[in-house]
Image (cartoon, rainbow, N blue to C red; front, top):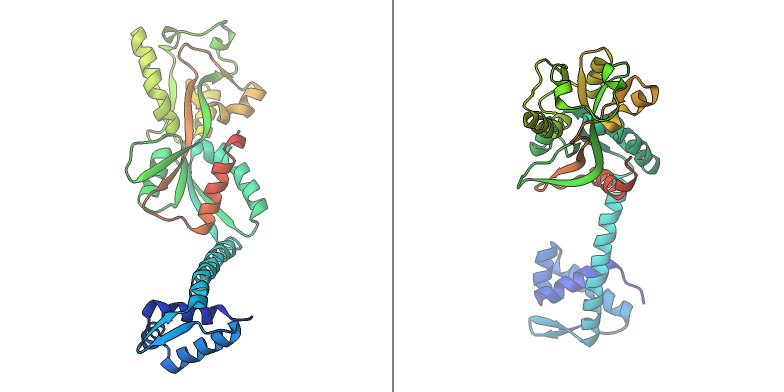
Length: 304
């Protein structure tokens, strides 16, 4: 018994239309061609598949069986074609994502390297900006997805937690506060200048509210602020003596190892936060972007 899927599709359409002429119009074929394909199919299976009742045709018992199984076979064909298209889509193409500074500089490069081992032909372009600008780029469709340091309430955007982070208070390795034992108090930092990330930064957004509350409770504040546009710039500013800063523990591993920066303990610190995968609920990711975002979510436990 041998028949092809094209003959099967014609047979299913004839049953759906209950006529050869209706199937011919639907499939944009000549009626004679439809009749020929049904005849060939019946010869292949060795039995009549359709009973002709005037202008109407209905399936025989064998036709009913072939109809049911035929629909399953065509759905399997469609599913296979979809999977093949996705697989072929991953043999080429490009992932374009946005990332805020900390995940973009200290987490995602390693993830990209592991992803490209699995999909060597996929190109990856990563734009690094502050969390707010990356979120807005996902929202307006400029980026398919992003990895950011804060989440917001949105009907349009979806935020999925990827990794945890600590925001710690750091000073230069030779700062006088490093010689103290135990946590420092807000009063001891009152006259110390503070070095901040830019206003759209996730690190700043997550840090400033609790830090402000800590200082306000003690009735003190900071008087001298320097604002810099990246974690690297803030680190260099602190090392140069511009003041203390609140930075991701992930961003200062090398500096802690070399003692060029040191963590200062203070009540209420460190500040816990998460990094999030942000996507637009209204949009369907490309196969390459879907594969990369799935890779991120599947490897959440290994994003340290």
